[in-house]
Length: 196
Image 1 (cartoon, rainbow, N blue to C red):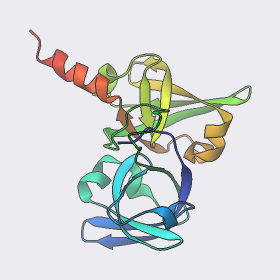
Image 2: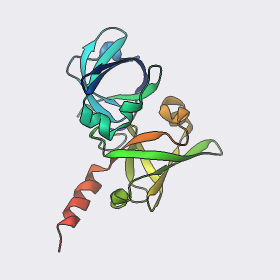
Image 3: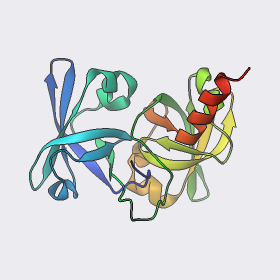
C-alpha cells in the first residue's frame, strides 16, 4: 500500500528483456536503503525488488503489467517516480494507493497557470464513473486531486514542488500516464453495478 507521495526520481539505467517480461535497473537515492523482496512503486506500478546494490535496484515487470502501464515505453535515461510502501504507523499524506494500475491516460495539455500547472488527460469512457470533481486519482504514482472532470477527460492541478520533483516536469502532450482510480470509488462503482 502506498500514499501517492513521491519520494524521489529514479533513472532507468538498463532494460533487459526476459521472454515477455522486462527487468528494469534503476538508480536512485533510495536504492541503497531497499531490501530484496520489498515492494516499490515505479510510476505508480507496484514492483518487487529482486536485486540491489549501493546505487541501483532491479525490478521485473511481467507482460500483464507492461500491457496495462507505460512501463513498456521506458527507455534508458528516462526517469520514473519512486515511492516505498507506507508504514502503517505513519501519516497518510496522500490517499490509499495500491500500486495496481487501472490503465493509461493520454496527456492532452500542459498549461502554466501563474506558478502552478494544469495538466489534462483523455481516458477510456468506460472509466468516467470512477471520478468525481475534487476526488482523488493517482497519475504515474502521484496522489492528486481532480481539478475538473469531463466526459472522457480530467484535469489535475500541479503545485511547483510536485512539478519540479516528479515526472510531471518533463510531461508533454501525447505522453501516456499510468492511472489508478480511487479504491473506494471502484468499490462503490462495483456495488452500484449489481443494484437493480
